[in-house]
Image 1 (cartoon, one colour):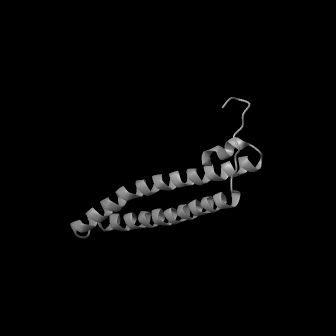
Image 2: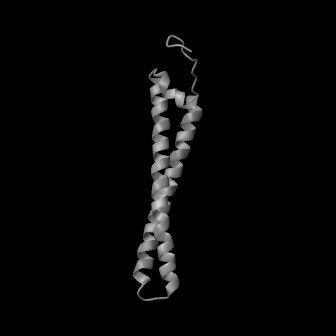
Image 3: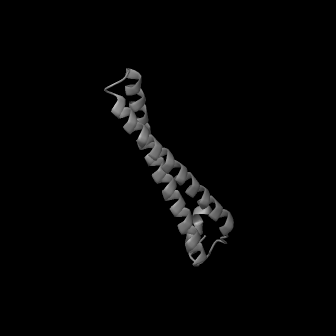
Amino acid sequence: MNETDEAEVYLDIQAVQKVAEQFSGINETLQNVNSTLESVVSILASLVFTTNPGIVIAEGYADRIRPLITLLLEKTNDTRLGIEGAILRYRDGDKSGSQRFA
C-alpha cells in the first residue's frame, strides 16, 4: 500500500464507548479496593505492637498488594483514556484514531 492509498476504517462508536464505560467501572472498583486496603493496612499497622504475629503477616501482605492495585488502576485508566481519545479523534475525522482498533 502506498501513501495515496487509504484503508477503509470503521469504528462502531457505541460499542467502543461501552468498552470505555466498562474500564471506568473497573477503575471505580479498583479505587474502592485500594482505599479499603489502605484502611486495612492502617488498622493492622496500629495493632502490630499489641497483638500476635499473624497481624504482622496480614499487614505485610496487604501492604504488598496495594502497589499492584495502584499500578493496575493506572493501566486501566490509561486504557480508558486511550479508548475515549480514539473515539474523539475518529469523530473529528482523524482516521488514525481508529487504527488502534483495526
